Image 1 (tube, rainbow, N blue to C red):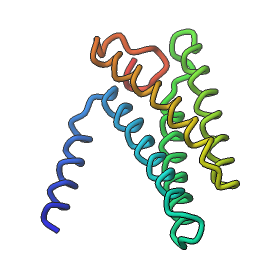
Image 2 (image 1 turned 90 degrees about the vertical axis):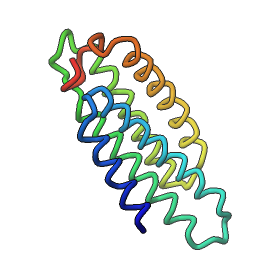
Image 3 (image 1 turned 180 degrees about the vertical axis):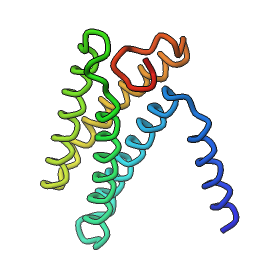
Image 4 (image 1 turned 135 degrees about the horizontal axis):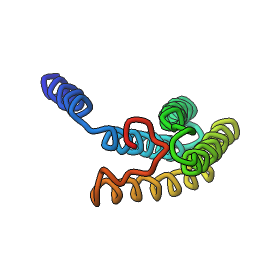
Length: 142
């Protein structure tokens, strides 16, 4: 129990001290963890009563995080092109995850996990190069 309290405190402090760019990275990581968890639900097997609940819960968590990422977009920054493209991309992710949840189909999850992972890695690389070079269109970052 004590270890859980320390972990919770560490996560809380990490969020409170993170830059806006690092917060976006944390959101990407959280969405990817939820997608991985949803895929883990498929490994439980057809006869496991927890299967549907695990898949549903983890997909809803990933969708909530992606919706939050979408909500951080500032369509008025710069020419708005980057933010509009990201908005469409997040819409696509959300539609695919909704399909995966309705049909209990793992393939859309695998697809979104791969695509979101690529966006996450590009974001992490951009942050490591220079946080001030963040693309316009993300509130709090540019």
